[in-house]
Length: 550
Image (tube, rainbow, N blue to C red; front, side, top):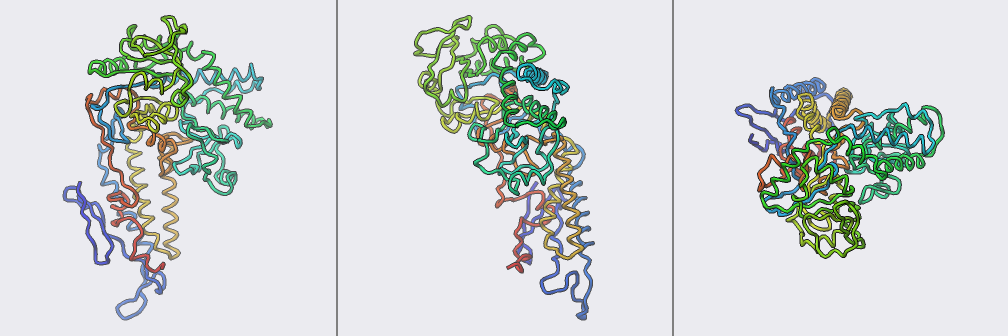
């Protein structure tokens, strides 16, 4: 497609676009009545008032644009995005990468949704048996798809919600228990605004004084359990302190991990819990064949990792890695210099010798990144590390140490499949065009025109709800609020050079492939956005139309 911009006689830039021989944009609309003229009337040939039907003009423009939008999206336009793609936030050439590092859980090892159900059920029963919560909680089962990653939880107000990159709550996505909280109540709870002050937000690692951001994929059952227990207490009129409920629930979830319950379930039934093992072997083997060095840094214990890697890669999996570190205690591993490395023997027992080098084929526990850098010499942009947790895995490495980072976002695959649907494509494109039309036509201020604009605003809100619900009926996409990026997206862009649904996406690219991020327009650049093209103008302010405001 090519874009042709021409300056009209009014001095305002008008924009047109050519698709083959077809113009994709109509000329700018007629100006509304100028100041000092009776609204809705102009002067005829002999000076007599001549009625101008602004309402009809607005609706005419609306229908023209709607037809234009649907002409822009011919059959087959969907399925443009490959769910196995790798997305880049920063330019990176794989040919420059000499060392590849990996987390284990949800990076090398992807788990089935069965695991979330098991974690929820076990933690729920711990609350009943050990914390003496009411037996009635047992009627709640895990709800797949209730929550999404990246949500914030206000511990004192007992609210689970989605917040955008500018610290605003997306109204309609604040839940107390399993039920949404009315927008008016949410705004009132935060002093008459849906904005969350920075001092209350989560800190560098996702934890604030009263807020927690759930960034771990393992947090999905945790959010659902908090919501289910809250729902039981509210439904039965039981008074409770949300701070106690949060602590008890998170402690119960922690017990599932700390007491090795989750590890035992997976070890006993790897066929059902671990996904795509053969693809992991293909990725690692390919990198080794191209003389890349590999290392593993995980918080999981050795016996668990050893059994999982043998299942996915084979009994000689350690031959692929130059360094293996377990029980690393990330993110403290990246900032705390005090913990030294300890070596484990073949049975996982701790040894007492001083570590002066990190040897291939050996297993090390704890340690810290500063000793790791000193002993390996692996520094800067020649290292690419993959992990699923933006804070615990990637933030420090990118910001403090200059490593390149890759985020594993399993949700990306399903979200791209939704984006590829005809319903999403048409809904979003028309929503964007309608938004541009609203912005352009707000200069019409007579009563009938205002009524038309109100109808358009209502339709726009309905379209936003439709697109949100396609991803998740409660919280929508993990990447966007209605129009802004989510707080999760903001962190994803900040802490990762590239992101993908799984590590196997690397198999779709050459070992020396360069990822180039697309230049997305800043608001003041905005060269060819859909809403501007379809309204036949560049972005506001429309100086000649708004001159009377001065």
